[in-house]
Every structure is written in C-alpha cells, then in structure tokens.
Image (cartoon, rainbow, N blue to C red; front, side):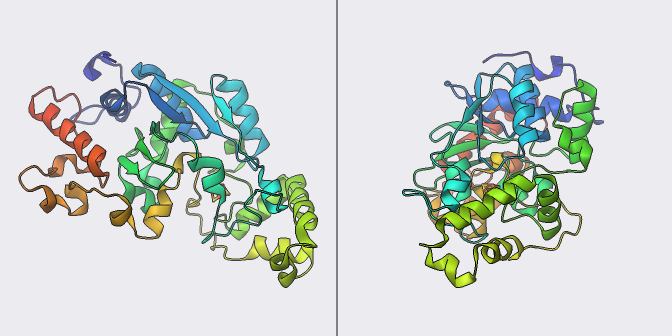
Length: 342
Ligand code: SF4
C-alpha cells in the first residue's frame, strides 16, 4: 500500500523538536510492514486497540479486525466493541471458560493457574496463526512487554505468527491524549476507575482487582462456583482442596500479587503468548534460526550484516523475519527517504 509520505500526514500528537510525532511514526510502521494479504488486527476493544484501529484507518493499510472472545470479558467491553467497532469479527472459542472449569469432555478440565494457564492458548493465541498480527502492546505497560520489542515472531508450535506493535513506544498519557484529540469513543469502564481492562478473574489480577470485579460482576463469580460444582464429584484435584466453595476461594486468593498501583501484568487480548516465551526464558531455542539482532546481542551470528543501534527498537529478537524487517528499516533510512526517525 502506497500512502501519503508520513511528513504529509497531519500529526495528531505534538511533534518533537526533531522528527515526526508519535502517530506519524506509528503510521509509517504500519505501512512499512504491511503484508500482501493485509494485517490481522487483534482488537481487544481496550484503549490501546482503539488508538491502533484509528491509526490503521489513517494509514490506509489493509486489515481484518478480530476480537478473540474469552467468555470472561467484561460485558461492557464487548458491548462497546459491538457498537463502536462493528467491522470486528468476534472469534468464539471451542469451549467457554465455564465449560473448561466444569471439565466438559474435550476441554482443558480445570482452573487456569498463573504458572499453568491454558486460557491464553484457548482464547487468544489460537487466532491469527500464520498471519502478521497488529497488536496494541506498549513497552510502557510492563518490563516483559518492553523486552519483546516492536516487532517479533512467535515460533511456538501451532501458534506461529509475526507481531507488529505500532504504538509500542507510546506512553499511557499519549494514548489518552490521542483519544481525546481524535474524539474517539472508548469503553465506559475507564471512566469508572478501571485503568486496565482484561479478563474478569484473570489469574494475573491482584487480590484488590478480584475484589472489585466480584462486586461489579457477581453473576460471573456465581457462574464460577456453578462450574466448579458441576465437576466437583468427579474431579479429584478439586476434592483435595475442599468443597466447591473452598475451591473457588482458594483459586481466587492464591498467588495474587500485591496491588501497588502499578498496571496489572495480565495478558490482554493483544498479547498472544508472548509472555510465555519471555517468562520461561526460552526465546533462543524456540526462535531458531536466529540470524542475529543487535538488540539481543546475537549480532555476531551475522558478522558484517548485523542490525545497527539506531534500528534496535524495530528489530528485536525476531529470527529471520524480524531481522529482515530490521534490515529493511536500515536500508530505507540509508537510502535517504528517512521518513521516520527511530
Ligand atoms: S488475560 Fe488472564 S484470564 Fe485472560 S486468557 Fe490470559 S491469563 Fe487467561
């Protein structure tokens, strides 16, 4: 897709002393990496996806928008998405969260735990396989996300895909400023005290977040108890914990981190298991072949052709595709078109 040169795009956010504004850079990134078949846009209906959707429209790239239904999304979020992002396809999972917890035949049979969660695979990672996925992930959200880079390749068997994160370098303040200046509709929950919206009762929520969610969506927590009750008589691991009520309380209270006001490190829709790789520290074996990337210290593997520092943000440890993308950036920059200043 050939669009307007970035310099000809009216910036929405303020331009720094040198170089383009954050939204101009994001548009340039979307145009740079657009695949022939168009992007798979992983639309969580959250604030970051709201910004990305608008940037996609402004950039003129082709894409199909998808929301992976988790069945434990806040109802307000899904209602918002249906109303304001009507082009988005709602991808439904094989089994609902409740069916998995109720141990329906063929399901994952149990509650997801922080260190043994099946839900991201079932509800999020399974979509967009083989495609170039655009996600509203930002480095400022967590150290893990910052470590992943703006472009990366997921090589997890059965879930392979490429990621492009056009607002990777945006701050939360810039996200809200962009929404305000573009007058974009956003989910009402943000105005009601939720600074981050993800799956209700996610194993990564803090105890405080669980308590607040319980107050807000009591019927979802009733549903959890019903699902556990349904499986309890045949599920030995539930019985070892205690009654169905005790199982629910155990699960809701275990392993919660202290809510210190920092943003929750849950995996929003747009994560697609990237944490999986970082958390287990196994990027290198699962991302072969690594052709080299300055940012990860693998440059020696491609002596004489390595990524160079100004491009490190855009390459990261992505294997072949990530490396080539990085090189494309460098070549474009050196050819002098310089539309984007990394
Ligand atoms: S965000 Fe949390 S609850 Fe939702 S799929 Fe991922 S780990 Fe599971």
